[in-house]
Image 1: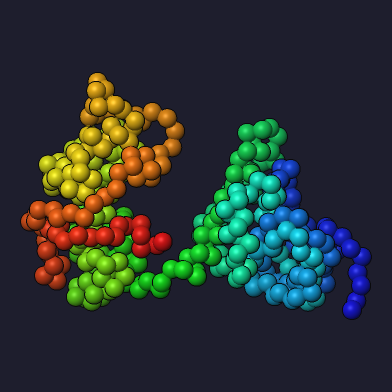
Image 2: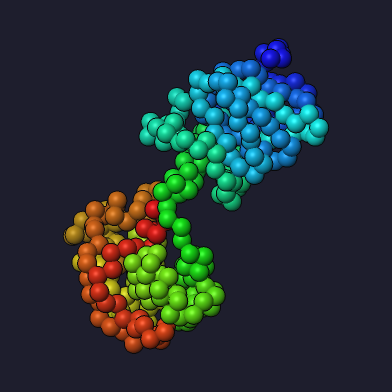
Length: 340
């Protein structure tokens, strides 16, 4: 086998940018001339490599991996690597490397257990890399914190993509389109009809596909989504109950309050008080101007409240394929569970 001089920086580099780095995290991009290579080396970090153009063959502990353009490839610590790039065309790739010392234990375990070692590039990962390259070189502690947090977030997004690819069932595109419309137009009175049009299928077909994917009909899914969005707005904003009800597509605040009571076993204002950490005797109730503290975790994590099986009163609303929009039956799935 041809023996080349060991190196970490590579040979045949046309240009590179490696300024976005701290002691534990680095983002970079590089373009190799035809015939360029990097290694042999021992990987020290958790590194993600994205090939934009050209081609690359990597020997990892003697095993050959071909890097596909448009995919995100994972390399883990402790392995001997040798990157050899195309001999006919320039090769451009980006990377994110994170030291094991700053990767949470559970995330390290998820990355080590990933046998695919590659996922398709997502829009979220593209934006994360773009954000990293838009940063100036970190010159103070807060800037270093930002780079390191972004590096961990990139690894976490890779792990999420891997889990979704292996664990999540295939979801019908019609259902995906309908849910996207519901999430972005839930305050509109014709949201359900719009979801059917966005799905590009008949009303009966959409009901069947929804039941298969979520366990709910489109109507029940939409109302569950509206209630959960309203509960999140109660916890995360200072809007009044009436304003939250209007923004979530309820005819009036009384209807919204009844639905919240049935799902969470308490009225909206009590839900807000618990989410904000107010005691039962607090003088500030109802309309608050801001939530104390920083970011808001998921509602169940804040309040400890679990939604219960429930039966809501029927409400006169438009129908979809004969399906009443009244809340009835014991829906056991929520908007988020479809993607878990």
